[in-house]
Amino acid sequence: MTKRRTRVRIGDVLEVSTPRGLAYIHYTYFTYRPYFEAIRVLPGFFATRPADFTVLVTHPKAFFAFYPVRPAVSQGLVEVVSHHPVSPNQAFPAMYRRAGAMSREGRVLAWLIFEGTEYTLVRELSEEQRYLPIDRIWMHDSMVSALTNEWRPEQDVGIPPALREPSPRSEAPKSLDDSAPQRVRHFLYFPSAKASKAVADQLSARGFTVECRKSAEGKNWLVLAWHTVGPDSPDLDSVRETLEQLAQEHSGEYDGHEVEVTPSPA
Image (cartoon, rainbow, N blue to C red; front, side, top):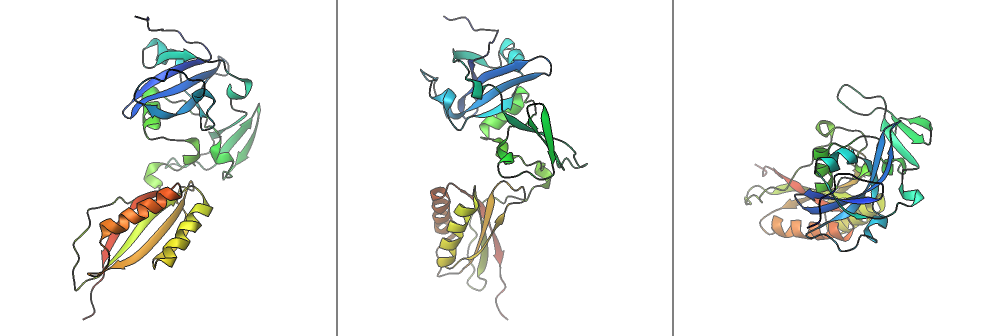
């Protein structure tokens, strides 16, 4: 039986156990002063350990993060399972961002954009800057949570969860009342304006009232779709399945609905 390593070196591939399966990170950089331990988070979850990591360590969807690798390995929180040399462009991010000024509620009011030893202060992130790695050290539990939820840097624009736009979830369809038609609002999220517009156009053609705008946190585009459900209308399960499929076809996510009962005329 191979003895589990308690020391790590640059280029090691580390296995992380998550509730969704095995995940992997690539150890790419370390300095004492200033302190940095950089990793590249490799995409996907696995039921069993891959036999070869050559393709995975060069995957274009991998992203940089900062994690105390050496203590994690020595404590047995992660396991060294492979080794792949680190290419120069995969060692440390050429640019990254760090939270600057923050409000009392925890909202980031300004970001520092670092490029080498120089930095620029910006109040709003551009589309490209949203994808920059964030200079924030993950503790192990935080990393496992991020991996499990498939977190990525572009999802974090500095708005704490308590201040984000509510994300309603699907409820069990309510029974229809002949005397009270139901006005239903559906929520769909998409990664780009182009995808959201394409879906909005399709829903509008199908008779939905549609509104398309950026979500509150600014990371995605939100499509709101309203329709009235009555006794002769398709049931909500059928509508939801249609919207889920439409969202998937455009790399988006259907995020539930709200039902408002409209009083019948007297």
